[in-house]
Length: 349
Image (cartoon, rainbow, N blue to C red; front, side, top):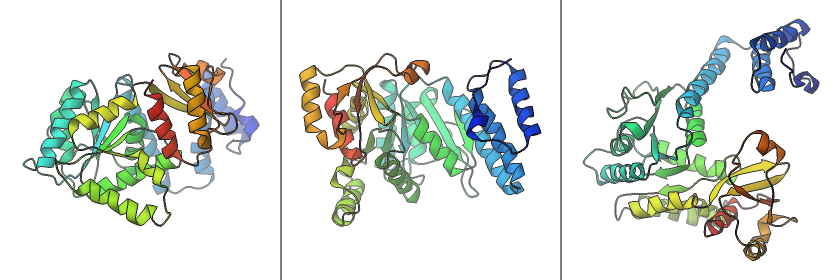
């Protein structure tokens, strides 16, 4: 019989001992289930919805979201070892627009670098991204809207096309599956995606990823947007100047590709462990360089400073980035922009 973790000790139950026992029995009969404790809580949550008299609309929302996440996980699982860039921009951009051609050429350049491309699967910038990357290296995250057209012709019939009912499940998928983001000029949706990316990274709810702003040659869209942020947000103290370190405005495709690839030239990922932020990378800087970095970034490294650390028991159990070296810091989250600058410096080694 499967030995289960003590979820009941945390007092998370249906409130009905008979149902709780039935959940225990169901999981045990299934066999040696990975993450059985989490499965237990997921099933328990469903019964708690019934207990708390959730209405049919609420039950449908939870059901649809769970199914959308499950399906998207299965689609992306095969490609977990491949770098992916999400492309955002206007659905109204026409094929004869220079921005369309810039998007198509950028996607083609990233595909040549063995990156895959994720777009919202619609027309305009999204179609340009799929056209440039080609079907084999394209994912589509379509949203079902009353007045929206079908997925663009470059992604139709692709097994890597996912149709979402909810924006929030779609957004989570973009964040979860992408290694970088490139934004082209767009309307409300594009700006919503830009600000959500920045909000999630600024608040620490998402790991840091490169965010690139790209336009047609000589375009004014992003310079004017950045000017607004500087004159209205930074000048009023609504954000910190370092927050703009989270985005990079590039004037050409080569610079945009270099920003994406350069972010992962040494840095791999991050993970919070018992209050310590662990930065995983391919190579550690020399000891004297670590000391210098700790001094230069003492405002964010905390009392423990910047220090080499070994893989934790949790990371070992999860087989999480075991090929990487590690630096730890007691990050105080006062400036994620400064953390981005630290990662840039680590990528120089």
